[in-house]
Length: 363
Image 1 (spheres, rainbow, N blue to C red):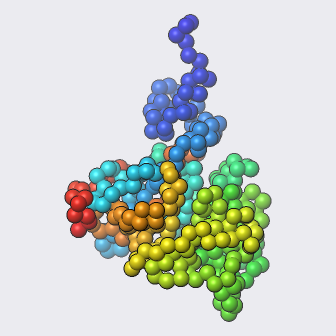
Image 2: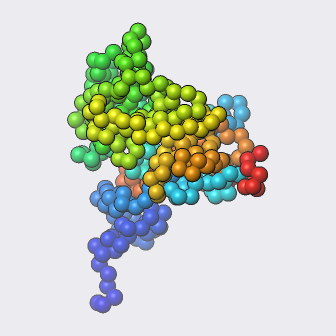
Image 3: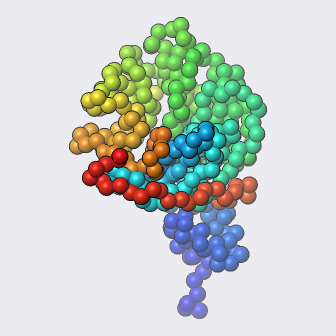
């Protein structure tokens, strides 16, 4: 009797393990095979993993000729970005050779990918769920996030007339009217922050620059909103979060970067310039907050990282010589989608070309 360990105690121990280790326990017995795939177990594991340091997932888009592409994903610790050369660690290929996938967003270990169809993919456990066919519509913007009120993942597709909302819990689409706000263009993909999706919007094409604003959508209430922006922002590059606040990255020149932070949510007067620096001769695209020490990393011209604190410009490693671009997202390993019967195995582990000499950089 002294050697007996209850199933509840085993569950408490297993829930603390990384996803790959947990998957191995499913082969112990029928009980563990089904118990680990229950919504309760998956949820408890997610809550435990959310307290762990996040990682960075890098998407390497590679052109293979004749309109064929490869999307290869590699996972990295936040303090260990891959240096110059070709990546020697294995990556995982998301199979869709004909067209390049659009990475809509990352949330709790799930990547939302868009091509002709929309799918959710858990990189950690190689599980993919393709969304049910939705009504045909010309979409203007996409967004993906988590509704903590209903414990549900949702995808939002906006067009001029209607907005479609996909619920992972019900595995179905619902439609609501799009906002009655005249807009010319929704800029880039959504930024998910505090249960709300955010898009930068250009006002009516005939209006002035000041008509730009942030369109919001609450994933719980399904209500649209509007956040005003200061005037004369220059070229808006990105909407993101920095130090737990909504932030707007913009530039007034090819080598100047400004970051505007909203100290108090949805208050126009709380916007302030939190960072301003230059990268001479380099065009800037995206900004990331370094996961381990809160420093900023500026991702520029598709393959370089600039640290404004050290002023160091580092070449990122890549999967082979024929890459088109790199994309980075924060990522946390999870078991999400394991409890979805319709999800299928997806993702092949592959290895890169031989690594080059780091001292010489990328040829």
